Image (cartoon, rainbow, N blue to C red):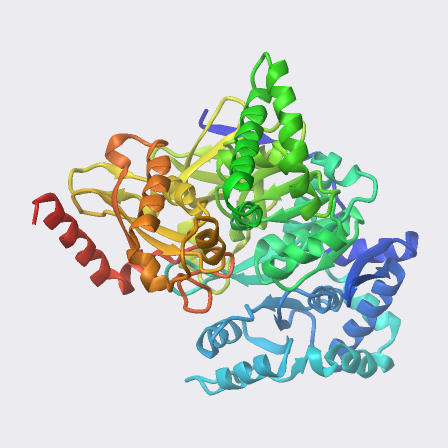
Length: 608
């Protein structure tokens, strides 16, 4: 099928904005818990009434500080409650919050702040305040930027005190002037190539999409005690959408600063639904496997995982699981799968995974463990989700059908085009890029895929990342990379082979998982440099490569690989904050290693 459309189910007042939902929660359900903040080992609730009062006070402070309607206010912080409060306050005051990743360099911060003409910024720490001061020194300066408020220095209290003289009527006038068509935020694409572009998203993009999603996947929010823990960076569109989604749904949300801490906090917060990216699900699986230890316990884990995956796959067949497989699944659940549920807090029934392909094997494993992972798809330019699998209609291996108000089309060259309520209005001050990306309302995603007769979409790769070998074979690297990255020892993988005689791979090792892996395999401790050359490690990596190769044709298979001693991280610039590899940067900086790899491979093949 070439085109599939799902009509909207809701008719919203054009005067609505994001914080209308906060006002309604605060006035109609004042005692309802909206947020929970971690204090030591406990979670402190914040009711709707408390949150509304706090947000209104901060919003008044922004007005008193000279932030006008439509002015840009930067936010540079890790994920925490104050991020959300600042976001809501800026919206309530009619301002436009602009996120800046807390990992940004002064040059990167300078580009965003200058391009968006940010008037003031809220940062988390004094260290980040120093980054902003350094950004002022970059060529061109930041003439528009005034105040820099520091969260850890009591910025929100300072703003609340500053706004004490601003009247309720003045604040209400600001808020009432905002509607669905008003600009809500400018999110700069973290970008795997080139300079980030500012994506302009409206209140309507977020509100209409979130309201439709709450109705469309109502089973997720209708659970008793429904709640979620947010640990994705709030500078990313996925987390911003979640922020609006839970506000519209009126469900509690906790914040935690990073993925590592989230593994601990999931156990105490006990979410019923989790929204994350595939790398987190890979990490959780690998962490549980590693903690089982070696020997018999490891064999039991792998047997249980295999049984669980087989059981889940059988659920999708007309006859369903056999009596024998059901019995084996009960044993596997008691031995291993129940422990995974406990690690996630014991109450999680649903998860939404987006940002990259999850992989069929992991999706089946988690479903067998009692966690229904609903894979979805979207981009910054679409306010996050365009597609998602539904609880009662989930095709593992696809990213589901379009959300209400969204249409999808497959172009002649295989590119996925989308149109609908979530599609952005254009790139900030970049008419040329906007015209290139949008045609008659259809957004060119840059991804390639296929769609079945029921509208279920399957992503096969990025259009610009297609590798053409010397033999003329077109290869999408993503399926191979995703499969190889799921192995415990592997941190990141980049498949190469453009204009080369065969497909190869650059592999980096997961230093967090490596000590446990070595112990479980009765091997001594070693450095990354030693591990990269170790024959036994290469043997296991080759087995992982062989498994990845089994999913593609012979011409697309990885024929050889090299292990790099430098991992790809956000800090060294090879990963985006949403954990995607900056492919162009890797190919550029590791070009000598790639050439050396192919040269050595040629020598091996020639027997030298």
